[in-house]
Image (cartoon, rainbow, N blue to C red; front, side, top):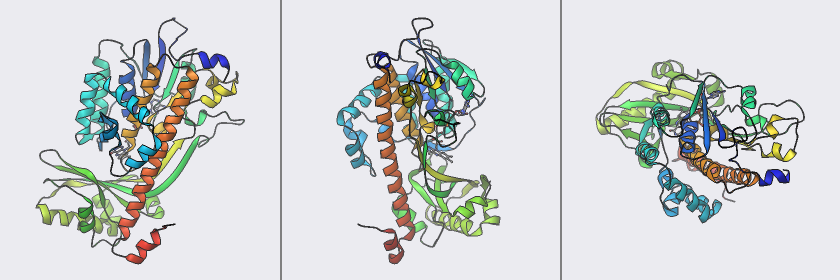
Length: 417
Ligand SMILES: Cc1cc2nc3c(=O)[nH]c(=O)nc-3n(C[C@H](O)[C@H](O)[C@H](O)COP(=O)(O)OP(=O)(O)OC[C@H]3O[C@@H](n4cnc5c(N)ncnc54)[C@H](O)[C@@H]3O)c2cc1C
């Protein structure tokens, strides 16, 4: 990057001399949270773009406790990756993040606390932050409805503005962020690791029901294959029903033969062995708690991918100094699923964490632009390592779990040295 870039700061909008224009594309959970955080920062003019006219995704999601941590110790406390967090992050980095979190406005913190209590429908998260943004009197956000194309995004760029892509797993700008000699192609800036194919199965149950590792094992004991694995804490009793969500591992060919979304009847007719395995699991819950499944199973088939953008900013473009590209003029950042995607119900929390870090960086007027970009890239890389190791560990544990009781099969999965 040119030395002039090194001394410039995010925070100077040249068109009106006062406000920095920040464009957030995508108002899913992460784009909304980031917008609500940026709304608190003085000197910004925030615009938010969204193509959906309504928030309709009702699936239950849960947030990680680390989002509410008030000390480095509580931030690190996690049954799977406590040591990794210690190994990857410096204590002062975590402490800075926690200090920034403590400056988050009470209205937004109250929402985060509520969601972290247990399960929450995704669209309830989206609606509540969206409403919060609209009802705040100071620093109103300019909202624009409709699909944003890459060309539209380029047209938003002006000297000193910031473009933030929160458009989810099929990110609008991800593959544009690396200077390429020929045409931009899908995957140019993406590393993808496929962990498995899975069915995410959800059902409602008319009694309180909690699950731990013993429950996962004993309720699947008669299932040699297609074990249903609900997450610990993935069952939530809302006062009248338990919301149960879990995963069944399937083969690639089975994945190909299924529609993207279906119900229990379709499963019973087309994949009776998987349905039988589910029924055995549910029968054991019923024997224990004497309740009934309410309604039908909801089934989604998805590839469980772990991916990241090699570049979470357009730093490479800015360094290239190419004056012929709009991507080489103003800073751009990827946040949420547009930057990193992970399975096993971790993604929203990770997206929130990265959005909080970026808001903190943008608020830091003392930092040169180049340093902001470098810090964000480094932070995203550490978050990637963390979620990569965590997801591989979960997958490995799942694989072992599926073969418990069969020592030879377990040994085949164990590579000790
Ligand atoms: C079945 C299932 C269950 C899940 N359960 C969990 C869970 O329990 N916990 C968890 O943490 N995660 C879960 N996830 C993942 C979670 O839903 C995503 O990680 C999360 O929604 C990502 O948020 P985001 O804001 O980054 O992207 P998205 O939610 O994808 O939002 C992107 C937004 O950008 C908009 N957009 C996209 N392109 C454009 C464009 N060109 N112009 C304008 N707007 C655009 C979209 O309409 C959308 O509103 C689950 C996912 C699935 C499929």
